[in-house]
Length: 374
Image 1 (spheres, rainbow, N blue to C red):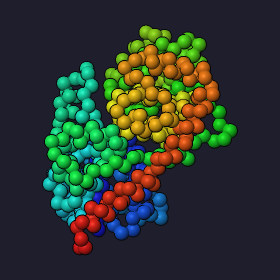
Image 2 (cartoon, rainbow, N blue to C red):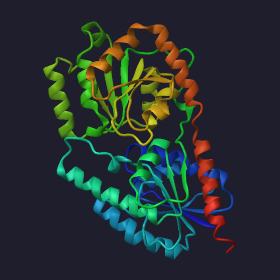
Image 3 (tube, rainbow, N blue to C red):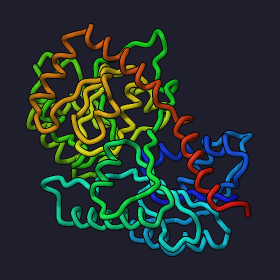
Image 4 (cartoon, rainbow, N blue to C red):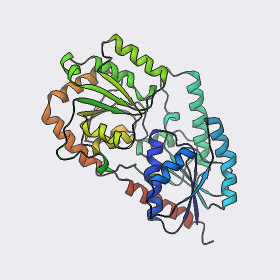
């Protein structure tokens, strides 16, 4: 049978990471079905590059979507035409929205729970965007044959907001390739605190910077704060102004978006990892940091405790002093850092992209099996 994967929403961060890891494994382990990828040109090249040279190549269908309005048009109008033309049996949509008119079975993955959580102080434009995405997500769930969530927290949150029952619902955790992040036996940690995420108000970096400014001078002089992730120019200017006011402009470094070996290296050399986010449906950087054997400090919010388990310490994401105290305590307590680092690596081993792909393939079989033979 024919399976199409809607990759149009993947532009940055976790969406790209997900597709680069899951698509090659689906193709590797599935010798029964033919795959079609609906992509933008750049993402298509990145996904194809992740597929091994001996694996069968999927059919690539490119639709360049320069903005969110055209992407929505492409998903709701052009994608159903692609499904019809290619006689697709199952359409896999891993980013909250399915094309309502697509004449095939549909599997939906809710990767973004932002529309179901309100954050104080956001602009009217952001609030309107969230309301639209919330409505489209709920409507998509009505038009799907199965719905997947990355965490039990996300599943409970979204299902509680519905006025109807979704019959086929699963939790499938995301994964990590631990060997990519694991330091070499003789590698040496450097004196910096790392945080990784594309940066927005919901990622709570204002609190992280305030917490860092509260550290003892001898700690902030020794340990820099490195932040990796995409950030808008206006937000970066705000942070730089605040850093200058606190005399930290040479201690806090925004590294931009990192990929591949640059990203792996940033994890491998760090002393600890801090994740201050207010809203996460899962939190892939947590797995990456744990795989790298980093002691983890993470916000006690949304799905984060579910992912971290006992492998890290949780802090109040509204209190900069709580985070500052926990950073200080870990830096000054080497045995505790080593204990958390060991727990982190052990917990990361519980999550793999192989397991994620096999769970998705099982769901493919279940949905396609209900169609009967062609």
